[in-house]
Image (cartoon, rainbow, N blue to C red):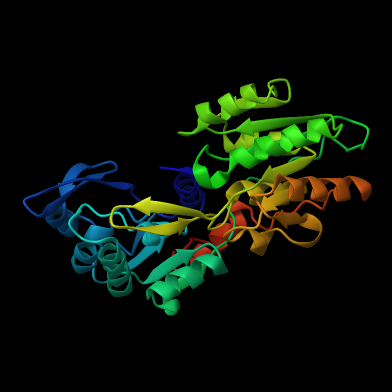
Length: 343
């Protein structure tokens, strides 16, 4: 499970919510096989006989092809699906014979017919999904999922070396390419700057090669994959959080779709820490980066980001107030709409 899944398990345990983690194993003779926490392997018929289920929560759309069967097996349960914002448009299926449009429509129909609550993460995601045909009445928007901030440990002085930080996977839409170009331009314009990059991913080696070819190895530090707690610590020591995400036209079998930020958890963590932000004007990022929090810029143009940074320095390097608005506890308050929490 990813970060949200483990945070939800911890929240349920803390609030006395009985739960079991169920993982899909395979399908044998048309019968889904699952691994049930504390019990072991079970098929759907056995689960129906032995388990009671008030809420069936899908942390991703991985089981989209089983949604209808699960709804039939547990008709009285509330079936909830949490989306990151790109899954339905990407529309992965085991059935590879369908066109991309047909796969998308399978997702839309399965959600409309089997899901009672669709946990969305932004107005941007809801707009895209509604345009595909998903019923708006299913949406429950929950924005957040960050650790509590730590006290700021680095008051910025414009004469100091600037510390920039980005925590993002090394994939195309995170757009590290322009970020490294920006560091080169800052150095050329006399800035003393160091960029710390956290994360892993398929383009990690490409970005390292770009840094080396631009002779920026003394200015860019690769931290590798770090925990959310370590991200929070780094943000407390960072001048500027920068993430120049783009809207990537991603090609899939039989078509393409726009893959981009449905929310941006690292950006929310930076907001929570009171760290000033430069973000790409892409996806849902303008919904959360505005006013004193930071600025969104053209993510394809490093000069725009440099202009924003110059303006921030000219204004005295202000930090915003820290906030707990996006904490996990506040985030999961929304889940009380379908999960009964013991007092």
